Amino acid sequence: MSAGKAIRMPGDEPVLKFKALRAFVMLVASRGYEDTLEAVGAVAASKLDWTIVRVDRVSYKPLAGSVLAGPVDSRMRMGLARGDAADFMLRELTAREHVRRAPGICGGGPARRNGSP
Image (cartoon, rainbow, N blue to C red; front, side, top):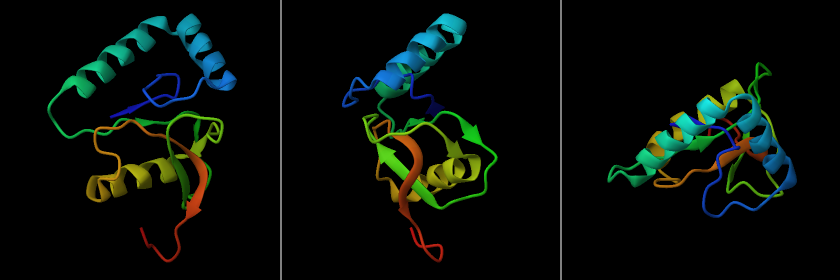
């Protein structure tokens, strides 16, 4: 499942830019925000293995092969190429590094070389 970084999860830090993002989303799309909160809660409460990938401002920039993943904190930036988001999600299916967690993702993490994980 994917959601935006406006969705706060345990382990996140109260970073101003994401607090502002949350306030903006709640102002202009409160119904969608509430629906997403409900869906995230249902997934997190399930007994299944799950990962909720939180990403925002996806772009059509070329694949960079560099993703930072983890709690939403001061290191987390906004934005990521669509290809990098898709690549992260597909790799997570087999890597299972974030099972039962909801990492935020953005560009700028360790680059992968020659297709290595």
